[in-house]
Length: 413
Image 1 (tube, helix red, strand yellow):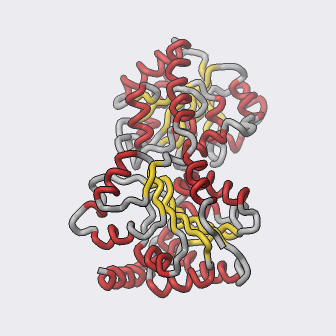
Image 2 (image 1 turned 90 degrees about the vertical axis):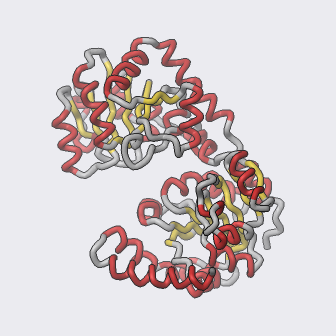
Image 3 (image 1 turned 120 degrees about the horizontal axis):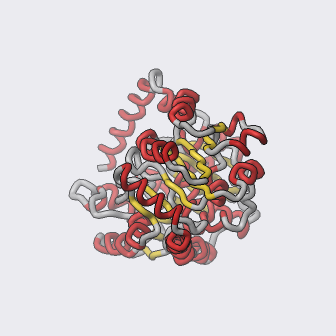
């Protein structure tokens, strides 16, 4: 099986190099990895003690961040290495000060794996959520380097539980411990005879809870909202905006709206602005007077959405009609109602909050209009719905503490 897997990786590497000439994202994927070994050589020397955290992309990085922060706090003499698989994560976080070194994970070929570990020399490896790479896992096992999976989540349809998943099942036997999000994941792993497992919960709840402890104030939002009810549409796609914009145009109540599109390219921002019949201000062109007069603020930038949710009385989170639901916990932690589209079944926290009544599903424009009008006109219902979300987040905190308790028990050199 390893022979076939390694052959497939070599062929994949060859074809990626060819495709990179025509595809910008694949080009970043390939060219960025050419720098990985040089970055490691520059960052680490023989005497360094290294804690390595690997994440697939930006979402997994945010999931692992509470653990990374605790590693830095409890092991100040160690250097933290963070690796990404995806360009969308690496490009955003490559200059992050949370780690001593941030780089791409080289492809999972035997030679690249050996060279990576020779240069990084980690005392501990932590893989977040779904990342399972057979050659990395096998070589970490051979070198007796403790390997943890954290915030892992397993479903019956995954390769591990199919007849053809032997190689992946073998890899799952390597970690020193697997911290899973839920009992179902634990049961599935136990059915394979994998027992070095425990339910820790999801570190994302710890991550979003930290948002409450920071200063979320934004002067431009104080000016814009000025005490009015505020609806925030976060990470919206055109399918989501097809619900939000008609409501904005027809609703007569004194409400301020913030739209944070997933696509902030100029063409989309201008098209979105032109579709709105109320006074609109773009974040990039805001003025004091413009913010005071506007009813709609369009964020044509990134990095502000989590703080802006603190100003919301209700929120809509995009992706439920398109590529996949975006983060619903970020607004939920502020104790506000959250609306979503109908495609949410692959997201355990969304399923749980829909069942509890904190997340409200709008499959059609009529559904959306009815729900939003009810929330805006009934403050008691609005507050009770939001408290369901806040309570759910509070109840699910603590995964980071459970993981760190285990790490501190390890005899790290």
